[in-house]
Image 1 (spheres, rainbow, N blue to C red):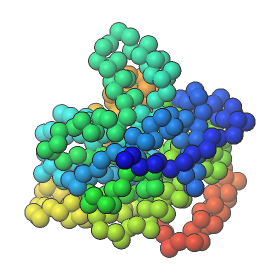
Image 2: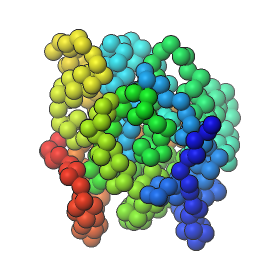
Image 3: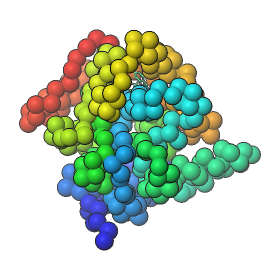
Image 4: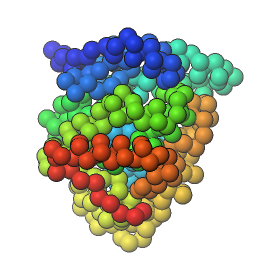
Length: 343
Ligand code: A3P
C-alpha cells in the first residue's frame, strides 16, 4: 500500500500573488509541506506520492543538501570514488546522467517547459533535454538498470524522502553556512529560468529568512540531518571543511563508501586537481553546460566563486546584522557549529 506523503497547505493567496510576480519559473502557486512547512511549487501536490513511495535500494548512494551547499562537487567526488576513479567515463558523460537529481521535475512548470521547447525549436536534441528534465526522478531513476549501483542527488529534507535509513543505502549530507548559501542561492535564482527570480538581493534575502525559498526552512533542513548524523550509513560533511582540505575529504568519503584500497598520493592529487574549482568551472560534464546550451541558465552561475565568506560584499551592514542575529538565534537549540577556515 502506498505511504501517505506529508500533508501540505497552500501558501496564502496574497503571498502567492506577490511571489508569482517575482519568481517567473512558477506559474500556478506554492505549497508548504509537513509540520515544518517546507516550501515547494504547486506540482508537489501531483508528484508527492511518487517521491515518497520511491523504492530506494541498499546499493544506492544518496547525496543530500540544501541547495548551494557544494552538492555538485561532492557528486563528482562520490561518483569517482565509487567508480574506481573512472575519469574516462567522468570526462564523457554528464554528471546529471551519472548522478540524477531526484525532484527537479517539481521546478519545471509545464508552461515554462513549453517556453524552453520554443527557444530550442531548431534543435531536437536540446528539446529532448528540456523534456527530460521535467520528468520526475521517481520514474526515471526507477527505470535505471537494476544491476548497477545508483547515485541520486536530492535537496529534500529527510522528512520528505522515502525511507532511506531503512534500506541501508549510503547517505552523504553536505551543509554550508547560511550566509554563503543565501548569496549563492540568490545568484542562481536570478540566472536559472526554472526559478526566474526578478527581484534584488534584499528581497530574496527576506524570503530566505522567512522560509519562503524552495527547500527552506534552511535550519530545519540542516537540523533534521544533523540529528541523524551518527546513524549508520550517514556521513555528515561541511562544505567549509571539504574545500579546506580536499585530500582529507577524499580519504574520509572513500572510507565511508567502503573502499578498502588505499589511494596513492598521485591519485589523490589527480582528484584534488580535478575538483579544484578553476578546473571544475571549465569542465562541461559538471558545469551544467547542457542547461546553458538550452538557454535555461543564462551564464556561468552554477559553478561560481566558491569558498568560504566570499559573499560578504553582497550584504549591506543592515542585512549583515540581521543574518548574524538569525544565525545566533537558530544555533541556540543545537550543538551544530559551522567550521571557519579562511579558504
Ligand atoms: P558560490 O555560488 O558561493 O560560488 P551546489 O552544487 O550545491 O549548487 O553548490 C554550489 C556552490 O558550490 C557554488 O558556490 C559553487 O561555486 C560552489 N562550487 C561548485 N564547485 C565547486 C568546487 N569544485 N570547489 C569549491 N566550490 C565549488
